[in-house]
Structure formats: structure tokens, C-alpha cells
Image (cartoon, rainbow, N blue to C red; front, side, top):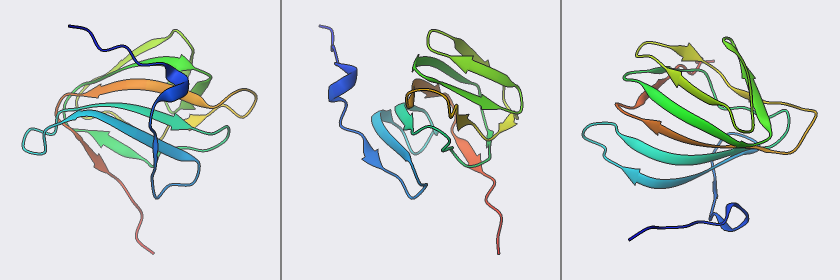
Length: 113
């Protein structure tokens, strides 16, 4: 059986990060494995983080930029374990929406005030 989801109907939930929302498809807190859809409004971004294991993502709409380059709709990226980045949605287009699988989770690199 297949699950088909219309991008316009994904039940995104707001995060504590301005302009960023997320929908969890699958998570395993013990292993850190997660399959998620993330939406970042133009110019908004996900905080800096480090990948514990590999992460694979497919950009479905819009695009984002980080320390490693720029990705747009249709682009696939794989981040190896230990990769650090802080993706920000491109400001010159629609919201960035991507599907990601984090195989072993992430560590947020939040700055303390």
C-alpha cells in the first residue's frame, strides 16, 4: 500500500524558529532516525546543526542556501556524518519545502546568550 500526500495539504506544525515548520512522518528517538518534511519561508532558516549520521534530502519547492552550496526544487543532497550547516530559504522565491531523512539524528549548535 502506498501513501500519497498532496504538498498543499501537508499538516506542517510551527517550530520555535521563525518561519520554519515541520511535519514528522517517522521518528525513532532511540536511533535518531527521522523522516520529515520541512518548510522554510523565504529568508528564514533552520538553526546550525551537525549531522550525527548521514542525511538525505530532496528539495520539492523553492530552494535554500547553506555553507556548502545552493539547492533548488528537484535537487537531491546527501550530507555525510559530521557535516555542519545552517540552511536558509532563498529570499527570491516561494517557501522552501524539502523531504529529509536523518539516519541518526542531528545535534543543534545553538549559541548560548
